[in-house]
Length: 135
Image 1 (cartoon, rainbow, N blue to C red):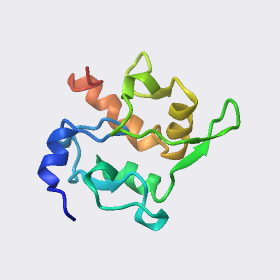
Image 2 (cartoon, helix red, strand yellow; image 1 turned 135 degrees about the horizontal axis):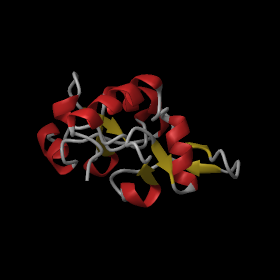
Image 3 (tube, rainbow, N blue to C red; image 1 turned 60 degrees about the horizontal axis):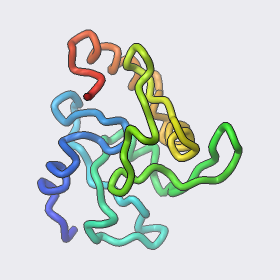
């Protein structure tokens, strides 16, 4: 890979671009992911790379689009390199759920299973520890 991992992780603020999990709070190393997967013509250029936790990267797989559960439209998934997280998502009042504000946000929440049982349980404990949600 042509881009230095440490540079990307620092640029991402040591957080997953999708669920915002911080490197300090997860048991695995943040992964470099292809926004447009290589299987779909994506490159190793820095502009196509970002940082994701293992779970988000696993669920994203080779997806680039998903259906918005409200409108049913096929929309592009959230691009953490080009889009601002808070424009597309917000935290539930208790800080455990990621809620989509936009079609893109809603589709990404579903496609990446951002509110899976394990993630929500872990976030609940992060909230108790005062580590979450990120500001």
